[in-house]
Image 1: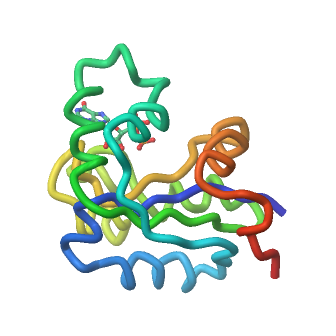
Image 2: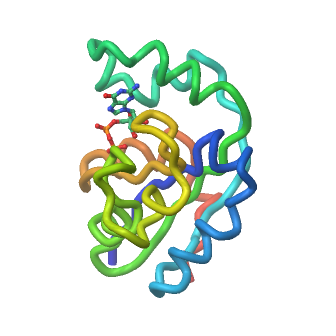
Length: 139
Ligand code: GDP
Protein backbone atom coordinates (compact mmCIF):
# COMPACT_ATOMS: atom_id res chain seq x y z
CA UNK A 1 0.00 0.00 0.00
CA UNK A 2 1.32 3.40 -0.99
CA UNK A 3 0.29 7.05 -0.62
CA UNK A 4 0.78 10.03 -2.90
CA UNK A 5 0.05 13.75 -2.77
CA UNK A 6 -2.11 15.16 -5.54
CA UNK A 7 -3.22 18.75 -6.17
CA UNK A 8 -5.95 20.08 -8.40
CA UNK A 9 -4.23 23.30 -9.46
CA UNK A 10 -5.95 26.72 -9.66
CA UNK A 11 -6.83 26.21 -13.35
CA UNK A 12 -8.63 22.95 -12.50
CA UNK A 13 -10.66 24.60 -9.74
CA UNK A 14 -11.45 27.59 -12.02
CA UNK A 15 -12.57 25.32 -14.86
CA UNK A 16 -14.85 23.48 -12.40
CA UNK A 17 -13.41 20.06 -13.15
CA UNK A 18 -12.57 19.14 -9.52
CA UNK A 19 -15.30 16.51 -9.40
CA UNK A 20 -14.35 15.08 -12.79
CA UNK A 21 -10.68 14.77 -11.77
CA UNK A 22 -11.63 13.05 -8.50
CA UNK A 23 -13.88 10.68 -10.45
CA UNK A 24 -11.00 9.75 -12.79
CA UNK A 25 -9.00 8.61 -9.75
CA UNK A 26 -11.96 6.91 -8.05
CA UNK A 27 -12.93 5.02 -11.21
CA UNK A 28 -9.51 3.33 -11.06
CA UNK A 29 -10.09 2.20 -7.48
CA UNK A 30 -7.78 4.81 -5.94
CA UNK A 31 -8.93 5.87 -2.47
CA UNK A 32 -9.00 9.48 -1.23
CA UNK A 33 -7.80 9.43 2.40
CA UNK A 34 -7.43 13.22 2.92
CA UNK A 35 -8.81 16.23 1.03
CA UNK A 36 -9.01 20.00 1.52
CA UNK A 37 -9.19 23.30 -0.35
CA UNK A 38 -6.46 25.89 0.24
CA UNK A 39 -5.32 29.16 -1.28
CA UNK A 40 -1.52 28.98 -1.30
CA UNK A 41 0.52 32.07 -0.67
CA UNK A 42 3.35 32.72 -3.12
CA UNK A 43 5.81 31.70 -0.34
CA UNK A 44 4.04 28.40 0.32
CA UNK A 45 3.96 27.62 -3.41
CA UNK A 46 7.68 28.43 -3.59
CA UNK A 47 8.35 26.06 -0.70
CA UNK A 48 6.36 23.29 -2.35
CA UNK A 49 8.21 23.63 -5.67
CA UNK A 50 11.63 24.44 -4.21
CA UNK A 51 13.28 21.64 -6.25
CA UNK A 52 12.48 23.80 -9.29
CA UNK A 53 13.85 27.05 -7.82
CA UNK A 54 16.56 27.39 -10.48
CA UNK A 55 14.24 26.68 -13.43
CA UNK A 56 13.30 29.63 -15.66
CA UNK A 57 9.60 28.99 -15.07
CA UNK A 58 9.81 28.99 -11.22
CA UNK A 59 8.44 32.51 -10.74
CA UNK A 60 5.62 32.03 -13.24
CA UNK A 61 4.75 28.58 -11.83
CA UNK A 62 4.57 29.78 -8.22
CA UNK A 63 2.54 32.89 -9.22
CA UNK A 64 0.12 30.58 -11.03
CA UNK A 65 -0.06 28.13 -8.10
CA UNK A 66 -0.94 30.99 -5.74
CA UNK A 67 -3.44 32.60 -8.15
CA UNK A 68 -6.52 30.90 -6.71
CA UNK A 69 -7.68 28.02 -4.53
CA UNK A 70 -6.33 24.51 -5.01
CA UNK A 71 -7.61 21.15 -3.81
CA UNK A 72 -4.93 19.08 -2.10
CA UNK A 73 -5.42 15.39 -1.38
CA UNK A 74 -3.72 12.24 -0.23
CA UNK A 75 -4.49 9.23 -2.39
CA UNK A 76 -3.87 5.64 -1.37
CA UNK A 77 -3.60 2.32 -3.19
CA UNK A 78 -1.22 -0.26 -4.60
CA UNK A 79 1.45 1.41 -6.74
CA UNK A 80 -0.60 4.62 -6.44
CA UNK A 81 2.31 6.97 -7.24
CA UNK A 82 2.82 5.53 -10.73
CA UNK A 83 -0.87 4.94 -11.32
CA UNK A 84 -1.74 8.57 -10.54
CA UNK A 85 1.07 9.77 -12.84
CA UNK A 86 -0.36 7.59 -15.64
CA UNK A 87 -3.90 8.92 -15.10
CA UNK A 88 -2.53 12.52 -15.08
CA UNK A 89 -0.59 12.15 -18.35
CA UNK A 90 2.60 13.89 -19.47
CA UNK A 91 3.50 17.33 -18.07
CA UNK A 92 2.85 18.93 -21.48
CA UNK A 93 -0.82 18.28 -22.31
CA UNK A 94 0.03 18.21 -26.02
CA UNK A 95 2.17 15.13 -25.30
CA UNK A 96 -0.25 13.54 -22.85
CA UNK A 97 -2.03 10.35 -23.91
CA UNK A 98 -5.68 10.57 -24.90
CA UNK A 99 -8.06 10.18 -21.98
CA UNK A 100 -5.56 11.38 -19.37
CA UNK A 101 -6.51 14.28 -17.09
CA UNK A 102 -4.04 16.67 -18.71
CA UNK A 103 -4.97 15.66 -22.26
CA UNK A 104 -8.65 16.11 -21.45
CA UNK A 105 -8.61 19.35 -19.44
CA UNK A 106 -5.25 21.18 -19.63
CA UNK A 107 -4.40 24.16 -21.80
CA UNK A 108 -0.61 24.44 -21.51
CA UNK A 109 2.55 22.98 -19.96
CA UNK A 110 2.28 25.18 -16.86
CA UNK A 111 -1.48 25.30 -16.38
CA UNK A 112 -1.81 21.54 -16.49
CA UNK A 113 -4.65 20.97 -13.99
CA UNK A 114 -3.07 18.45 -11.66
CA UNK A 115 -0.01 17.53 -9.62
CA UNK A 116 1.06 14.09 -8.44
CA UNK A 117 4.18 13.17 -6.46
CA UNK A 118 6.87 11.81 -8.80
CA UNK A 119 8.25 9.13 -6.46
CA UNK A 120 8.19 7.75 -2.90
CA UNK A 121 10.68 10.35 -1.62
CA UNK A 122 8.62 13.24 -3.03
CA UNK A 123 5.43 11.75 -1.58
CA UNK A 124 7.10 11.45 1.83
CA UNK A 125 7.91 15.17 1.91
CA UNK A 126 4.87 16.49 0.01
CA UNK A 127 2.18 14.76 2.13
CA UNK A 128 3.32 16.33 5.46
CA UNK A 129 3.72 19.69 3.67
CA UNK A 130 -0.10 19.85 3.69
CA UNK A 131 -1.45 17.21 6.09
CA UNK A 132 -0.85 16.01 9.64
CA UNK A 133 -1.34 12.29 10.33
CA UNK A 134 -4.59 13.19 12.16
CA UNK A 135 -6.03 14.56 8.91
CA UNK A 136 -5.37 11.33 6.98
CA UNK A 137 -8.12 8.74 7.30
CA UNK A 138 -6.96 5.29 6.28
CA UNK A 139 -9.82 3.14 4.95
P1 GDP B 1 5.16 17.17 -13.33
O1 GDP B 1 5.83 16.23 -12.36
O2 GDP B 1 4.57 16.48 -14.52
O3 GDP B 1 4.15 18.09 -12.65
O4 GDP B 1 6.29 18.11 -13.95
P2 GDP B 1 7.60 18.81 -13.32
O5 GDP B 1 7.88 18.31 -11.94
O6 GDP B 1 8.68 18.71 -14.35
O7 GDP B 1 7.19 20.35 -13.26
C1 GDP B 1 6.37 20.84 -12.21
C2 GDP B 1 5.34 21.77 -12.81
O8 GDP B 1 6.04 22.90 -13.36
C3 GDP B 1 4.55 21.20 -13.98
O9 GDP B 1 3.46 20.40 -13.60
C4 GDP B 1 4.10 22.49 -14.67
O10 GDP B 1 3.00 23.10 -13.98
C5 GDP B 1 5.34 23.37 -14.52
N1 GDP B 1 6.25 23.26 -15.67
C6 GDP B 1 7.01 22.19 -16.03
N2 GDP B 1 7.72 22.45 -17.14
C7 GDP B 1 7.42 23.73 -17.49
C8 GDP B 1 7.85 24.61 -18.54
O11 GDP B 1 8.67 24.23 -19.40
N3 GDP B 1 7.30 25.86 -18.56
C9 GDP B 1 6.41 26.28 -17.61
N4 GDP B 1 5.93 27.54 -17.71
N5 GDP B 1 5.99 25.50 -16.61
C10 GDP B 1 6.48 24.23 -16.54
